Amino acid sequence: MPAYLIANIEVTDPEGFAAYGRLVAPLVASTGGKYLLRGGALTAVEGNLPLKRLVILEYANMAALRAFYDGADYAPIKAMRERTAKSDVSLVEGYIPA
Image (tube, rainbow, N blue to C red):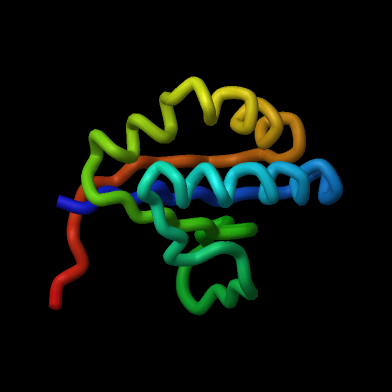
């Protein structure tokens, strides 16, 4: 079953976050992940969900996603994100119905 990383990110250091983006994208690809959404304009139409910059990654399964997220290769890159942005991150197992 596919697994998704969903992140709501508020960038606090644009230059530092750009460096994070240059490092994380190849790692996501090399670990079997795929970006479904990476930033873009947000338009609230109902409620008050405080979204800033939305990122959604897809992995084949939760084990592959956890291997990326908890992996030694991501640890220093994750620390860079934590220094350059405020993030809410969730890992979700599920599927997109046909």
